[in-house]
Image 1 (spheres, rainbow, N blue to C red):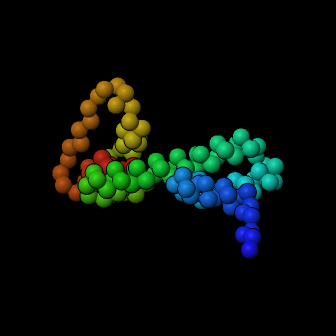
Image 2 (image 1 turned 30 degrees about the vertical axis):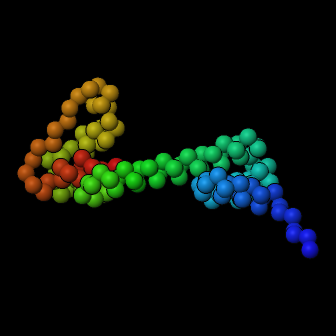
Image 3 (image 1 turned 135 degrees about the vertical axis):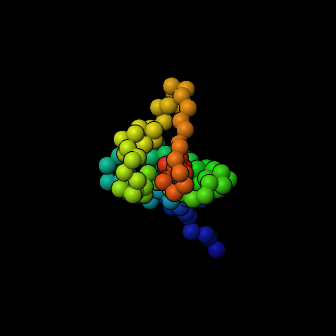
Length: 125
């Protein structure tokens, strides 16, 4: 009995699975649809496929780093209630969030009593 020959898409899926590239595997159908519809070139498809894998890998690394950092919680700057603490200047915190102080080799110190949002601002992503 002959086994059915796999389609090119199925062979690509099998190769991506064998290479342990789940990000690329998840993005494959959408990318191939864009190629079939002439919305992107084959070179763009390869770039998008690799980009999807790199994005997944980087997100996983970030998640692992956050877990191992033992920070009290994952916080974002968007979650910070600036109205609760009007003495904190939104522009100043947003400027710090751009990390320019690192390039300038400057230190940043957060001072204030408990409960004003120092830790939230420090760990915000």
